[in-house]
Amino acid sequence: MIRPSLAGPAVLAALACAALGLSACSGANDNTASKGGSGVLTIQGDAGDPTLTENFNPFSTTQLEGTRLIYEPMGIPSSVDGKYTPFLATKYSTPDPTTLVFSLRSGVKWSDGKPFSAADVVFTFNLLKKTAALDTTGVWSQMASITSSTDTVTVKLKAPNVPFAGTIAQVPIVPQHLWSSVGDAAKYTNTKPVGTGPFTLQKFAPTEYVLKKNASYWQAGKVAPAQIRVPAQSSNQATNQLDVTSGKLDWSYNFLPNVKKTYVSRDAAHNKYWFPPGGTIGLFLNLTKAPYNDPNFRAGISYSLNRDTIAQKAVNGYTGAASSSGMILPNLERFLDPSLANKGVISQNTSTATAAFQKAGYTKQGGKLAKGGKQASIKIVLPNNFTDWVAAATEMKSELGQAGVAVTLDEPQFAQYQKQISAGTFDAAMGGFGGSGNPYTDFNNALNSKYATPINTPTVNNFERFKDPTVDQDLAQLAVATDAGAQTQATHKLEQFMYQQQPVVLLYYGGSWGLFSTKHFTGWPSEQDPYMLPTTYNNAMLVIVTHLKKA
Image (cartoon, rainbow, N blue to C red; front, side):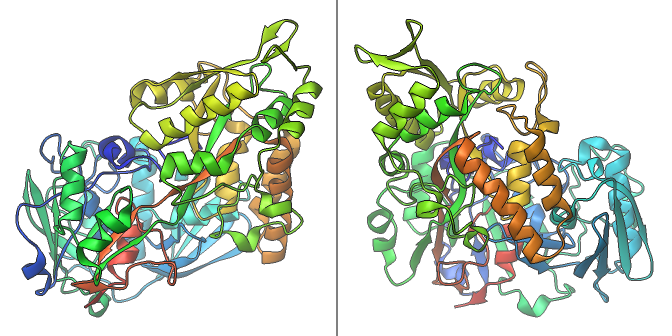
């Protein structure tokens, strides 16, 4: 899926929040050090434009990030390896590939004191069905029905799709006794939110909002912060970085060059960082066009590139060359096909590239790679303010130029970039692959032919317009796999295809730029305890905050 990936620069906060990408760090006007001791957690959150707009609708694409601490889903799979953290559902089962049964937690109350029940879950999903604009994750594209008994909810799927349980589980649940009287739920800003989550809204101001601990939360004993402050971030990236390095935030998400000097050294005892791979950045070639639809030409492009150099230029070497298997390593190493050489990482090899180009009918003449007297050329589109992507594309332009390919960079604003990739009106595009923690979801989004709409017909996935009935069949096999052995076997087949055919030329891993202070709270995700990616802008926030302990 081409999107602002976890590697996009922090300056893209407002844009990337709507597309699962980065947000920049926010600042505060007072020192939080004294407040941290009393249980106050200050985190980077939402972009002010220049001020915050109050919106706690958990289905809105413009919701404030703190909404995720007010409303809970049934469960959250880790974006690292897909392992579940249960919330409103203690577990789920798959009696067959088209049935999901969620066992709901007992004794849960809404923050207004009313009891939570299975009826709330059924109501929530039917609300998404009734108001399609709220169904931003497309659950009803796969769901056929939802029913409940006393303490269970049963979902029937239209077709076998076992991995889709993760998407269904993450839908935030709202109270029927309040939302049933909401007029237009798509326009509802929900300024007095009532949820089952660990926090409630204490106060909102255009420059900052404050959440307070929900005393009646079902696992209140696990919630260390008494209060959470979320100041509006600046539109000026330099200001955001200054707020990070000056210690005004307990938790932020920001790419910092030379992080040990600019951040860790400011308070070596407490300032920590973890920059794990959160997605893969790749070159998406438009497969409806020649020569990009020729796997030999794509192989020539791939073997012409030095991924280590590209990663160094793009992200200061914080992350490295990506496996062309489609697996994010080491996160998904348990799924990696052991027969792949060098774990599927392709090294630059000019002789192999030359041979591949020759199979595609191209030879190098006078420094130009040509076929029928016409030089091979590629125009790469990418957002002009995704600084790591720009650096990567600039290096690729140089390396492919040495191979004889004429490369130009098209760097529009994000909105125009998104329009082009959605419509398929591009030669090549920088984009993000994977990052869900689930191999099926990653492969399905990138390769399923159902997303390969005609050019000028917008699509939400598979922007390169890949089509292959064999791959569709492999995806279908993975969708119905209910045991680990079958899942691994089906995943290996897709990895081999990615490695050999390279429908997307994968380059380097995009980092998750987690910055933490342990002065007031500990328990942050880390290399030693990688329970979740350290992002502040999605459901990871709920898992992480309920994992913290007072220092």
